[in-house]
Image 1 (cartoon, rainbow, N blue to C red):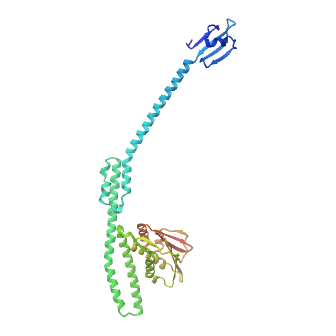
Image 2 (cartoon, rainbow, N blue to C red):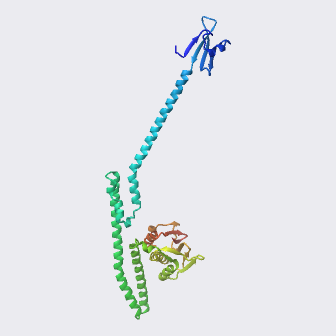
Image 3 (tube, helix red, strand yellow):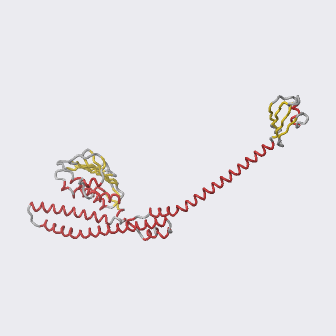
Length: 356
């Protein structure tokens, strides 16, 4: 029989805390004494009329149970500490593994492929990133940026060189036209001369576009502040010959005299292209071309000879439909100067929006 479980047949042999209780002749059953930490079962004896008391001492059991809980708590704490330690080590290892990729991404983010400098080449030098996967990625990025930079430089050189070469014949043609103006010409010859002068001006404008794009890395030219109206009026006068009976409705918002920052020649080229497209592609006679000037926006609306589906159209779609080869250049100049340009078709009208 376990040491903490005993049987008593007489009251006199019971533990002191139970003697007084047993003298009251308790009924058969199970009793619990919390203060004495004893459990007592009263049963009837088979050989005697006296009841038998089976006493179970639970003090030792409760002590062992309490110790088990402390052991369990200690083990849980150790396991939790080891888990936190493993998580912390995992984070540190992960950060160290990802750090070269993050560093490479930050370096590449700051690089302008169109303006690669010696410092940029040093920052993306693949040897700084070792021979692992990050090093392979760095070498690939380095080679790609070098190819992009070489392509941009070739494009810029060709555009600038070709534009300068074209300036010489334009200058010769301009001089010849000026001499022809001084001579006596018939009315038909004067009309031909006027067409030649206009074609010459258009060619000069196209060359200026190419030169402007070739020089677009010169940041010093993009910080000037200028008024919009003089350049707009100049573009209208330069393209007025395309009206052929069509009228212009000029609407200037009250107190609007916009002044913007940017590249004045680039702005003139942009506006001149939009004005020319509006004048040239308004085919209906007696049609009105609306030009609205706001403080932060210029809207040019011309009526089309056919009704297009309403909604925004892309530059490629507009160029395909015949709205001027300069629209792609307009988009590029606007992006370079942080201006916003969009085209949309609405109720048979083409609306060009230029905002700053």
